[in-house]
Length: 169
Image 1 (cartoon, rainbow, N blue to C red):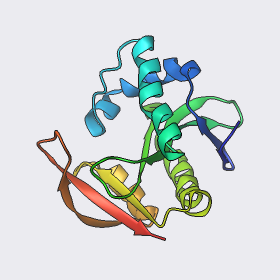
Image 2 (image 1 turned 60 degrees about the vertical axis):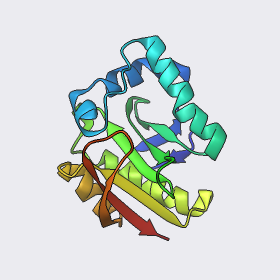
Image 3 (image 1 turned 30 degrees about the vertical axis):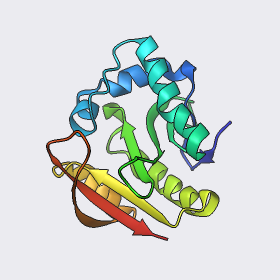
Image 4 (image 1 turned 60 degrees about the horizontal axis):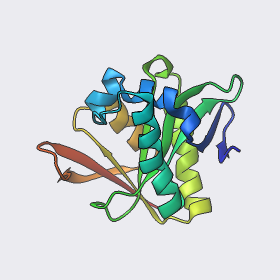
């Protein structure tokens, strides 16, 4: 079942059946550089990531990261959704796409749909975004979504600063 649909995309909950896709996405060099190395190296690791990450978030918060797929072909191309981190007061919008699907507007299309869903369906009154200081594509996307830079923060376990963005509804 699709949680959100746009003209070209659908978003749905991740399941163990998506392990192969998650294994590929989380090991792309851009994911490791811009997000983190999640140490997902096998299909079993990917299933565990889905169950303890997005799956746990669905159960605990009623939202999480969702698989983004192409409606026309049912092809998974990325993830996008809401993440509630212990060190942030509000949920933040997260996204990552296979590099071969970059620069086609998919990140904005899915993130704008998640932003609107967060406000209308989930009932959030504020949405955050975080990104590394030099991830210019992500910075531009957050700004295009209407989020504004607030300040630099240091996330737990990190030695580098992160940009914090916010949007109030």
